[in-house]
Image 1 (cartoon, rainbow, N blue to C red):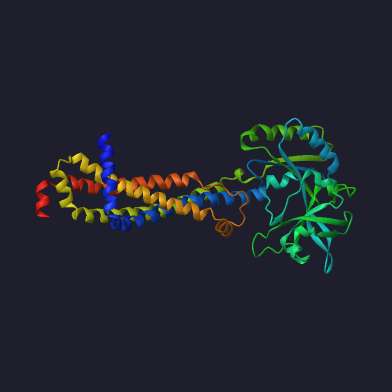
Image 2: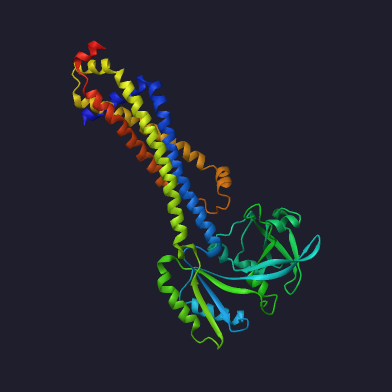
Length: 403
């Protein structure tokens, strides 16, 4: 143990003596390790962003969609909801939400009443589908008691209505059966520059309280987030329970909607990470070769120094270990610096918003990326120090006189 500590002290002393050479040789390693760490981290954050984007359409893994269907006519939404509530009590679902789309609601704008695409949803829908807000808040269960029912509008509609800050409690007037004054509590952002859809989201219970029945064009379904571990047991049993005793001419479809139902997205994520990891590995290999070359050139200049140390009793193992640890310690320090810089950069909110604007649940910095970078730095240090250490073993005392 004392020999190892002595070799470590010798390595650190050599690093301090040759600060400039070490600094120049390790800049490339710090950049390479930082690049590898960044690639792994960005690939994981990109996978999270891609998963969230898929969740907005199909729901989190695993989400079941329950769709009541009638034979040639609409389904009685109230009757089916009572059936669903009774059946779902047995399962104790933590997140279940009604959702209806395909409605057109007249909205008062500066240009008069304009039919606007509308969606009806329960508060849990935003959690299941990771709905994102530009500003404001999502629906809550107690919103149904508000005198002015809450609504969430799209960014293009918000701009048409004047873009009034939500702190000023803006309202919007709807026409039709559910007409009246509604309070705007949130704004959903554009999905991209091309998104100019004017849309309004209504709380399901608040809308249902104002109409006798849902419009025939409304496509009703229930989304249930059950989790992948319970999916196989819940899906067939739930379908059987909901179909039991249905009136003639009605049926229920229960299917999985989330991205986990398809292996295509996961395969695409794995392929993306493989390609980016290969590029980062190539960068790291080039950095390692550069460091080995510099270390070999430097070792030719240290023959006299090593020969003198051998003359004063330094064993071959001591010299080998000192040279190896010199490279190992230096690359580890460089790797830690590179990783720290990447962590600081990738934790910047401005950078994340610009790279992944659709990200809702911003993940912490991936530990796998930091560990991968640190291991890479240690491996490169060991490889870059091993060859020069072998060269140092061949140095004899007489060589100190020649040089």
